[in-house]
Image 1 (cartoon, one colour):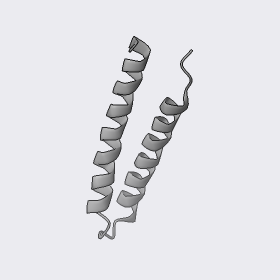
Image 2 (cartoon, helix red, strand yellow):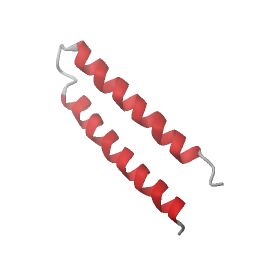
Image 3 (cartoon, rainbow, N blue to C red):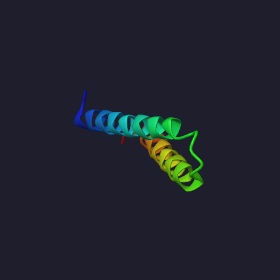
Image 4 (tube, rainbow, N blue to C red):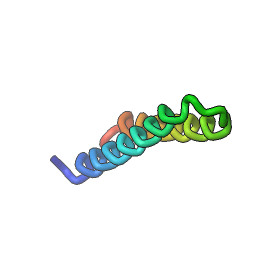
Length: 61
């Protein structure tokens, strides 16, 4: 495995960990009436998922 692949794997693991954390926070707060809080969690999760998609679809040159 080359250093590019290892770095990409580490980035993906980090992003997945952060996505899981935000997902847990979002799930824990679904019963709340604080719409702004839910909105922030949702937007953060969407941002992280898009970054993960970008990392995964980037070609190794």
